[in-house]
Length: 229
Image 1 (cartoon, rainbow, N blue to C red):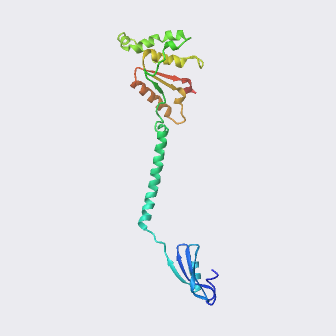
Image 2: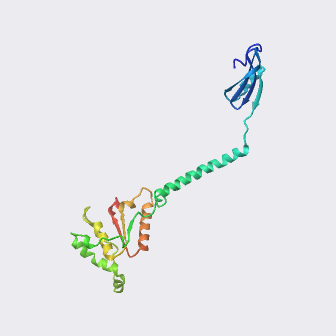
Image 3: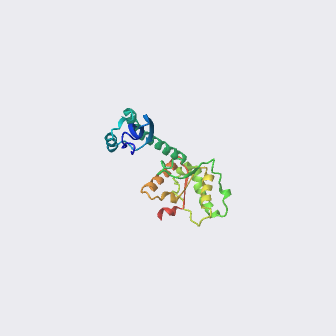
C-alpha cells in the first residue's frame, strides 16, 4: 500500500484490477509512463481497502466472481442427499459383511444339525450306560410317535442332564438325536441373557418356533443355569 499513497511524481499505483482476492496493479513511474503490471494475492475486498484506493485517486476496476445460482442451489440440495446415500450404502455393506447380525438382534442363535449332518450315535458315547438306558424309550417315541399316541402315551417335555463340564452331556444329547434320526438344535443358556429387555424372551420364542417347524426334533440348551443368574 506504500505505492498507493505515493505522490504522482514518484513511483505509484495508477490503476488496479480486482477479482476476488487477486489484485493486478498498474505501477507508473516518471521514466515509465506506460506503467508495468504487477499481480498479487490479498484479502477479500473490504470498504476500508476501497476507500483507501479511491482516496489516493487510484482507478479501480472491480470484477465480481461469476456464480451460477442454479448450480449452487442444486449442490446445496443434492450434496446432503449424496452423503446420506453413501452412508446408507456403507451401512448395508457392513451388515452384509457381518451376516446381517444387526437385523437379527432378537433371533435365536441356535445351531441346527439336520439328520444328515449329525453322525453321532450311542456307539460314540462311552461310560454313561445308565443314562443311555433311561433315554431309550425317548428315542423309540421319536422314531415312531404314532405307535405310542395310539396307546395314549405322551413324550416327556424335556430331559435334565446334570454334571460337571466334560462328562458328555452334549455328546449324549447329540447321540439321542442321531439315534432317533431327528434334527438337533444346540444353543447356550447365556445367549438368552441380554442387557436389553425383551431380547432374551424374543430369542426363546424364535428358538421354539424353529423347533416346531422341524418337529420332531431335539432342542439342547447348554448351561441353562445361566438364565437364572
